[in-house]
Image 1 (cartoon, rainbow over the protein chains, first blue to last red):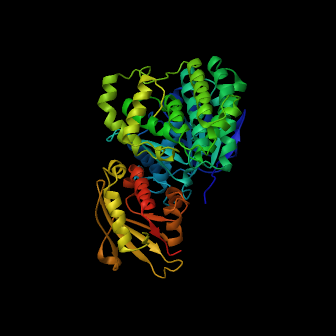
Image 2 (cartoon, rainbow over the protein chains, first blue to last red):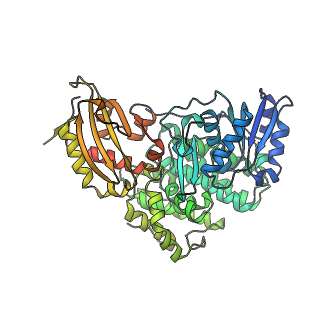
Image 3 (tube, chains in turn yellow, orange):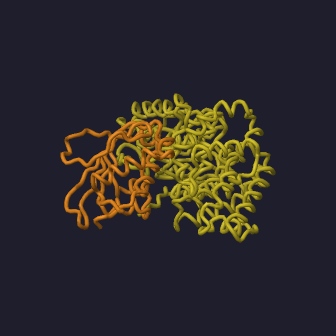
Length: 388
Length: 136
C-alpha cells in the first residue's frame, strides 16, 4: 500500500490571477528578504482580492532553521490567518510548511515532524505555494528540510498532510532568476527526477513523471541559462521542476540528497548545487547493485544515450550529466566548490554521521555504510570514478 | 533451526544478532530508548505478544518476552498484526511504508526517530537475519 499526493495545480502565464478567487479574511505571506526586494511578494499581494487582509513574514533564511520555523509559527499564531501563502524558493516553501504545522499544532516539536503521525491540518488555514525558482519541487511535496543549527545537520522531515492545497506556477515569477540560481535550482530538479525514478519507493504513478521531467530539463535548462528572458524555456523548466517534485515527492529522493544535505549543513553549499554535484558519483555507486533492474538503461535510452546494461547506461548517463553541468558552469567536484582537503578531513566524521542517518540515504538502492560514505566524499573531492 | 516468532527465544536471538552488528552499532550510536514490539493475533497466534528490547547507543542491553504489559514503561511502542510483521521481516513490505501507511503503528519520541532513521533500518535488517518460524 502506498499513496500518491498532489496539490491542485494552476500553471501557465497569468496563473497568479487565480488568487482573485480566494475567499477568506486574512492571508499571511511567508517569504524572504530577496524575494521581497525583487517585488514578487508585492505581485502576490496585489493579486489577492480586496476583502482579504494581508500580513507578511519575510524572515526566512537560506537553509531555514528550526528556530525560524518557531518564529514564523508564533507570527501566524498571533494573527490567526485562514490562508498561508508561501512565496519563494525551497527554503521559503519548506519553512512555511513547518510554520503551518506548528500553527495548527503548537504542541509539535519541529524537529519531530514526521510522516507517521496525523496532525489534522486545515482546521485553521489552507496553504498556497508559489515558487519563485524552478527546481525545489517543494510546491508539490510533503517534504520539509530544516536545519538543526546546534547539531550542524539538515533534517529530512515531512508529513503527507503538508502537501500544499494549491500550487501556483506562474512563469512571470521566475523570469528574473539570476543564471547561477537558475542552474543550481534546475539541477536540483534533475536530481529529484533521476532519484525519484531510481529510489526504492519508485512506482508506476511516479515513473512517467520523473522520466518526462528529465527530458524537459535536459532540453530547456541550457536555454534558461543562456537567455533568462526565454519565456518558453522558463515555462517548461517551471513545469519540469513541479513534475519532478510530484515524481520524487511520491517516490522519495535518495543518496545524492543524503550526501548533499550533509554537505550543505556543514559547508553551507546551496542545496541544488550540492545534490547535483553528488548525483553522478551516486549513480556510479548504485549502478551495479542490482543487475535485475534496468532503471538507468531506461533513463539513458529515453535521452537517446547508449547502454544496454545498468553499468554501461549509468556511464552514459553520468557523462551526459557531467557534460550538462560543465556547459552550465557548475562545479564537478568538492575542490571546485572551494572546499580544501584539510577542511574535508576535519569535518569528515560529522559529514558521514549526518549522511548515514539522513532520511533520503536509506531510500537508495544501495545504502552505504560509514566506510563507503567516506570513500564517496573523497571520490567527490578528487573528482574520481566511483568503482567500489 | 528456525525460532518461533513471537517468543522469548526469538527476541533473545535478535539481541545477539544486534550486538554482533557493526552496521547497527554505527547507525544507532546516538539511539537511546527501549521498545515494546507488540505483535497482535493472526494465524495460529491467538493472543497479543509483547517483546521488549532495551536499546542504548548501538547495543541491546536486555531483551525478553513480557507477560505483564505494565512491567515496563518503554520509550517506544511499535505495534501491528503478526501478518504485517511477517511481511516486513520477510522483506515483502518496506518498514517505512508500513509505518507511514499505518500498517505498523509507532509511538514515542519522533524527534529521536527522525534523527536516527538508519538505526531503525538496521533494526529491521536484524529481524530479517533471524531464521524464523511464523504462526501465519
